[in-house]
Image 1: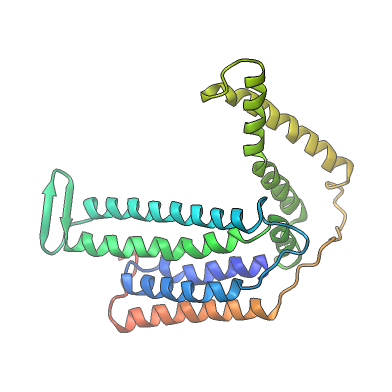
Image 2: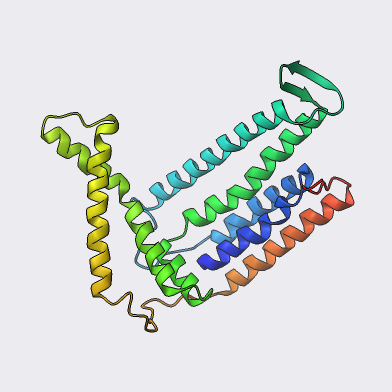
Length: 256
């Protein structure tokens, strides 16, 4: 899939979920998107490149870690909603400001499922996206400013080196016989990052990245039939989940 179509998929599917607080639309969206995502991503390849170092095993670990973080965040948000939502209906537990009622139980279910439905496609789709391809798609299809795209790409590439820089600083400090843990590594890591940023800035300047002239692209970002199908499915998921929610009377506009 084209990275821009992945972004549009997440936006189209997630927009209805931001307008309602019900659990019906969130559950239906989560089920439908979990069904279509494996089909849309099946057989995808990066030509000559790996998304993450370590190949498919590292990629699966990244996806699992992202889903774990999403699950933890959803549970924590649900606990807050369970304890501090406005009480309504039967009150099951009350201690100080914390109150568990029928309304808070319904809200925690809706909140947890909605967060999962919003974040799961984003984690899966963008974990399988190379940021260079994403930058190409933004510049060529979305007509984003070249300076913004190239600068953001350079910043993301530098950010990906943070773990390698941290390991380098720790090994260097151990070789000198000093502590390599805690806050002591922050200053050397900051100095190393500033040096790399300066070198990168000079390299980009020398290659004319700020010339203001129209730029060409080494790689061509293309939309395929799979991208069209993905966007059609995203619209269908949004319409079906919203329609079922309204038909069942579960739709609860967020402003209300």
